Structure formats: C-alpha cells, structure tokens
Amino acid sequence: MSSSSSSLSVIDIPEHCGNAPRKVVIRDFLIALYSGAVDETLGMLKDDVRWEIVGSNVLSGQAETRAWLMNQDSTQELKLHTVITHGTDCGADGVATYAQSRAVCFNHVILFAGHGKAAKIKEIRSYLIES
Image (cartoon, rainbow, N blue to C red; front, side):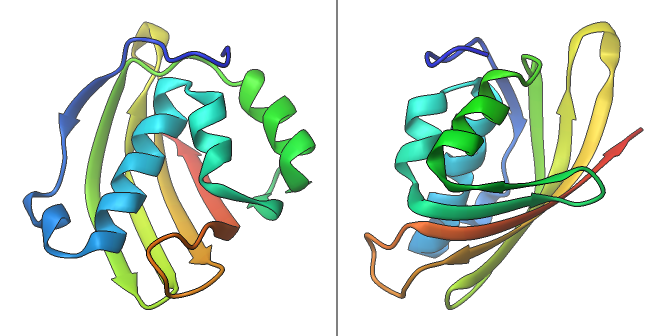
C-alpha cells in the first residue's frame, strides 16, 4: 500500500450506520484502512495507539502502524456485516477480498480515547481469518 488510496469496491455497508455518529467514524475508518489510505487511517488514531493483530504482532505508536499499513496487500472489495458501538467500545466485522479472490474475514474491536466527537482511536484488537 502507499499513502494514497487504491481503488476499493465497498459492496455492502449496514444501513443503520448513519443512526449513530460513532458508527459513521468506524465505517470511515475501515474504508480508509482497506482502501490503503494510510495517512487518513493514521489521522484517526492516537499517536500512542496500540494495535494488536491477534496471533501475529502488536503495533505500538504511529511509526510501527504506518510501517505495517504500508506492507498490506491492496484490498479489492470490502463488505461490512456489523458495526456495533457502546460508548468508547466499538466493534465491526466483515470480509475483505484481495487479488485472486483471497478473502479475509475480520473482526476489529476498537476503543476510543474518549466520548467526544473528535476522540481518536487508542486501541484496536484485530482478528483476521483467511477464508
């Protein structure tokens, strides 16, 4: 990936995402993440973000996160099944499809630094399963 977005086909977004502002933030974060918009993705994270890719590695801070994001394969399609929010604790699951129809089912548990509209993401736990 590069710091600019690639072409991503978002094939399904839950209709109720507009009912809660935090759901829109999660949706936009995942679209930025899977479209390869590294700078936009990092802009939604705290400087001292902690991102655990369960079973793989733990990223600490923006520099490690940028390096990891830059090495991710380009996603061709994104399908979000569910976006759930409860205060600062949120989650989303879906499927990302890559070249040669390789698909990865994901669940991201996302914790925000506060309740305000401008609060950034302070922690993520990502569960990624090849399907």
